[in-house]
Image (cartoon, rainbow, N blue to C red):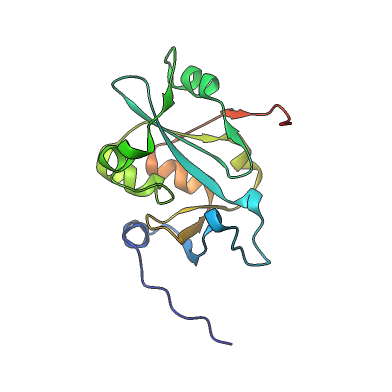
Length: 160
């Protein structure tokens, strides 16, 4: 069966123009609607936080929790906190579920931190700027393109 050609998102267009290899995906991780060949651990969420005046982006596996304390330390701040959902679009330009490092970097140049666990896999999946759309991309290439830093920013404690 031939796969339907996906309409390119702005993120696809930016990466194509930059010559960065990636694959477009139509999947909605928020609804647990995943194809068999994709594991939840391969999908990363892009979270927007603030240190008061500065917005900071943290990218962690969908199956993990971001440690605000570790991200603050990595970013050189005393404390960071999540941006309220109601303020998300005016801060990053994206709605909940569509935040993505490529679009945010293009628009704002906020500091971006990717959990170092991403380096263990050849590919990671991040949002493509629209709910239900994602890209499969090499973590190192993504980090280089958006000037991201790899750091230990996940809360690794077992959850009850």
